[in-house]
Image 1 (cartoon, helix red, strand yellow):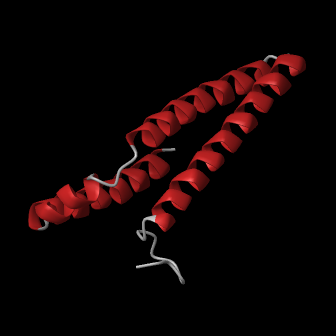
Image 2 (cartoon, one colour):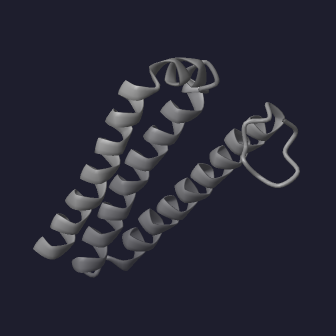
Length: 109
């Protein structure tokens, strides 16, 4: 477990350092890009992720005490919330594609 935690700390520590460096070197680009953010999608996805983590923990708890009916129900809630997350990402990516922000082949620039 400690190897996993430390590897995650190294990965995200590096990502945060790159972010801080890019933010300091190219602050104007960050300001311009922030105008394209859809706050309601990000806030909704955060709520969905936190709720799905809670549902997964409950499913795990009920499975550990062999209460299979509740474990299945909470696992179904977790799956449903995962599908909601994917749907929101699809909407977000579609909006970015329409604005010409997606770096994919054929995107309108």
